Image (cartoon, rainbow, N blue to C red; front, side, top):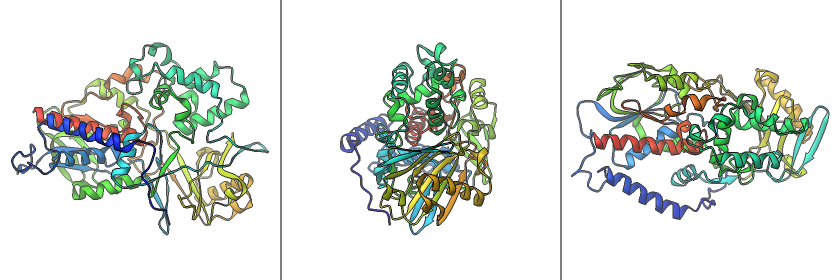
Length: 496
């Protein structure tokens, strides 16, 4: 079974928790709302106890962002809210696959790292432990008929010289508002592929960069805007290696019990305020005092609405009246299809560790992008997860399993031919509400649409990881956007 969770991660929790508590007290105190039960009877929150059926806040989306916002509302003393989720589960783009006997494998977002203090704090508050991603030993690189074992020391082996250039460029690109960069006209017209082509990279090294971008961004460098990628590096303390490595990086730490556990525990705390299988089909009167949301379970009325879903998913909702053209254009232009297919091969134990291998495999121009050791913290069983190239792997799971087992046997040994289980998840096909895994923002996007990302539209508040000031697109960004959405809702209600 999984070892007992630990909470002694390097995020300096005591100091930050004190600051967080002080900041929350000041913020909510300024709004005239009580963050607790004391005084609740003498000073009720707006809308509490009303019998008109109008809620203070409706939240669309029960992913990390939406549930964080709901949790913050409740902590502030606001009980007049509901969370509306289209799927029959919570978690959004985090999802655990049950392997049996108490073990899981994550099929969605799964890692946290240095600087991602918001999600680390949330995990600690929910008593979800952390443990390091396994990378001790040698990585196997496959190319053609060749096979190479090399100790990459917790990195993906990309050129540190090029990484240093990206780190330096990122200092001029604010993570939360890349369109305000003083170099926006220069940088936003380039793709990352354009920029890499100017760096004199050898062909054999360029393959590594292509793989790195596919893993981080979901697309080849030619389809990723340089400005957006630099904003991602800026989130990582302007350190490319902190973004795109394993050791001491954004892929460095996993959550005991899997990342979806954050959402399931928040949902358990919120109880029947979370409504599943309740897609919002239309949002009407968002420019009036009371917003009407038409769902598959009837109409919901609320004074404020926190929209905590992917911007492109908003295109599946009808807005009456139509949204301002700037916001509508952003949603139409947002990349809506960057699917990722994630697989897991399960073994009785992580046999590769006995051979000095870390289970990580990279394949040059093959069906396997990256495989890694995704075993539980106690290594009671062995799990190899992988991102694969859909076009080169059969869609039928049994055939996909056989192909990957052959690749793993070549990389890790013949024991790989004897898995005890296999599963996969394609985010492009999972359900109508998981239209994409990551957002590959193209060149020119932020120059044209950036200023429409966060400003509210009437009583609509935009949330979700894509709106975060730092670590946008990551679980940490989702937590931060949830905090911000709740504060915006509480502040506007107080002013009203």
